[in-house]
Amino acid sequence: MNEIAHNLAQVQNKILAATERCGRASEEVTLLAVSKTKPASAIAEAVAAGQRAFGENYVQEGVDKIRYFAQIGEAALEWHFIGPLQSNKSRLVAEHFDWCHTVDRLRIATRLSEQRPAELAPLNVLIQINISDEQSKSGIALSELDALAADVATLPGLVLRGLMAIPAPEPDYEHQLAVCQKMADAFSSLKNRYPTVDTLSLGMTDDMDAAIAAGSTMVRIGTAIFGARDYSAR
Ligand SMILES: *Cc1c(COP(=O)(O)O)cnc(C)c1O
Image 1 (cartoon, helix red, strand yellow):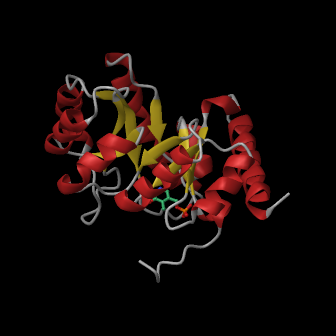
Image 2 (cartoon, helix red, strand yellow):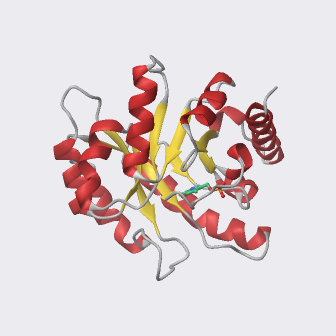
Image 3 (cartoon, rainbow, N blue to C red):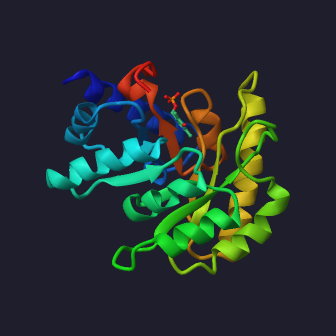
């Protein structure tokens, strides 16, 4: 087994253990492999090991990888845009990605909807919540969610699938769980109102257990699968 396949198996085991601890089925939690800065060869190793869903943060880099895998006939992959999105890059996301996790304003949502090619399925979107209320972070406050969700749900080029958050680091599990629970409450109330909502993108390496206990359906893991990132070439 190569290193990436080995790492993937370990992460899958951690997800399994976390779901078992809280009495959930492991199939309820999707592993999103965050491949930003990593070469196509690393992604290909993960694909060979059975991984299907990949997360990218930089639009052009992600599009290059999507094109590459389409070209070699690897069509069954799912590409998630998880980075901050600027308006001038929205067209590339709308034209190439399957998901966008970082919708945090109507203007971006409207552009993504208008720019989504008619021959593709609508773009799956998550509304990003700034759950730890950090000044420097993107995402909206929970108090703004109902209004934005109502608008996003009307856009024909998008499907509202749920919520995403990047909680600030917390000192221990109990604090992590409290923050994740706030997200889970907002998610379940959204789910009750919109039948398309089924995805809570929450949990990274350090808070995965708490996120899964609270009800996350998608954890985003990069370094534990692909190793440390090298940003020097960017
Ligand atoms: C980079 C990134 C991750 C993965 O982080 P790792 O520490 O490498 O596991 C998850 N979510 C988002 C939004 C990211 O930008």
